[in-house]
Image (cartoon, rainbow, N blue to C red):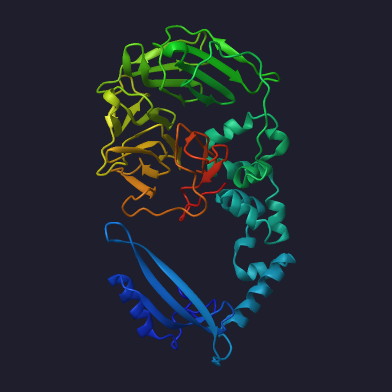
Length: 477
């Protein structure tokens, strides 16, 4: 941590660094006592300097160390250590290689590896198509040949399909203007979000009567809204659709057969293309744990109840998501008497007589409601935020938990949590704690957080982005 290696290519601590001082630092930290001393350090260019260091432990109310404050003061030192070994030779060789590649010298490229002895088709379809969009963009700057190869639209489509999945690429193909932009441009904008901007959309029609606590989801380029809480807490059971592919989009009330009982505080999820699934909520007679499925493209569209065996407790304000286009996952929520839940259940809708299965875990996140579940990386789910239980109290949360359902024994992992054991905190500025927000999974496994109920003077209008696939996840605004 204290720059004890000299030069960018040093493999071990410099011999003039006093190992006794380093041991004393470690001992003071372990025993919770203050340290003061000097240690030889090095700048990035290898020049020496003395680091006058002071480490002071800070104690909490229960007399345990919560933080350690470090104060350092650098002092120039007159020690002649000679030139930094190995740097000039290595830099010259790297500069020579890159200058040759930039000039497009294929002989130099062949001398480095056998990549350029392959045909353009093999390089594109067998090698480049397996890279991530960021890597393909980087490769394009190596030499002229790779630059030309990475301009191929078929290659970029394969890259996007491998990185984001076939379903995502099919949806992107239906987006108005996608063909005009091209796959290379789409990959760049969705990876960097450089062109992301809000645009106010004027729509016709209306959702009447007015309501709150409804549920909505996207089905391709259509937004579907179901149910909600009307006047005098009246549970609603109507369905509305907004087609964003239309030149003049407008809300349309869809006449469906056999609608579920009215409800609010439920979840609505998309499964397998145009199918929708509703679970739980609060109805006229109390909390619900029923499941209804609707094929939006059927003629006429009809809600169908799924009688799953061993259902979870009736609940509202839970969270749900879908996996593989066939499986419904439900987590947490509020049960009778306001009891918060922390369980996670899975229902496979592809089988004739589905059975609810609780996903066992040795440890579960604190009970909560108003949180979100998102799918990333194929079979991984991410939980964020909500109103979480902490002892006898309930607090808004900005915790992040993940679970890999492809494992034989799936378990919750804490990416970041308020006081969770072993929890780390992603870099960047984390979203303020919140509930009733929206989470959207983007191509590449990234999760976008927006809105919700945020306490104090914090704004709920900022967008936050987290990539849980990174080694060190970082929040970005």
